[in-house]
Length: 277
Ligand code: ACO
Image (tube, rainbow, N blue to C red; front, side, top):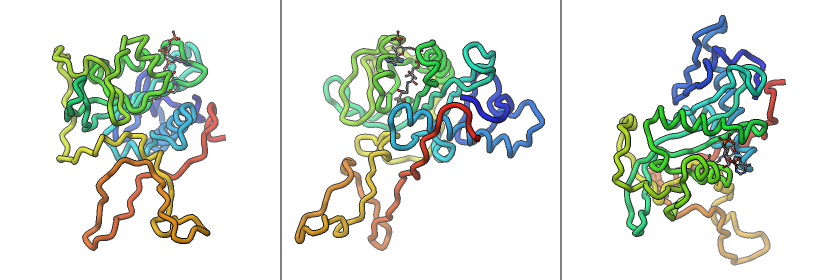
């Protein structure tokens, strides 16, 4: 993916790691820092849109705003030498983050865990099956000091399952009741290399059966009962909209549902390639 601005001061060289602070690399070039930040936001938003399009999702799971709101880490790969793309173009990205999850082991017992989760992964269509995905994934594993069998994968696509099978021999998934996929070895006592501990954060409730990063995509806009009754069906029962699991409803002190939604605005699906024309 190409952009109508120089990516080097925004992303640095081959690998760029972005966290919730959205700091551009900013090591070189005359561009003002505020402009670089805006350019980084544009890059993240466009990558998120391209990934959503590639996966057939109705909205991106990765955007600058969602990055700021979560402690996720984005690994971006550039073809800095211009081996297979126009020099400096972005090849793809991988987003990971720690999540508290309830996970079932082989015996069906519930375990509370906070694994590193693969949340979004995309290599540009023209560059898939050239080894870039593996290069990016490998870089992430080394940076996060985690073994592949210790990861939880958020609703993997068929391509990602094939990728994990081929490169890491991950074949035996342990069935879960949520949308995360874990593999044999996840609960093993095999010593893992010392890893960076997850950043400290206030105690948070574990969501029932662990909300996936993608669950907001399933939320259907529907008016509350009784306005959701099918017109012309006097006495009809409320129409069920969302398939969301039984989540505790958050009520405000006056007893009213707080009406929050984390569903982002649906964005125009991006066209791949040059942005900003
Ligand atoms: N069909 C089946 N398997 C595929 C495909 C495909 N079209 N593309 C890649 N793979 C798997 C295969 O195992 C392939 O090996 P093979 O060519 O010998 O069959 C292997 O990946 C290739 O490895 P890389 O070249 O290192 O991987 P790549 O650069 O293609 O990146 C990725 C893999 C990220 C899955 C890429 O194919 C992609 O962006 N796909 C579209 C988006 C997507 O599905 N992302 C995952 C969403 S789920 C999530 O993010 C939690």
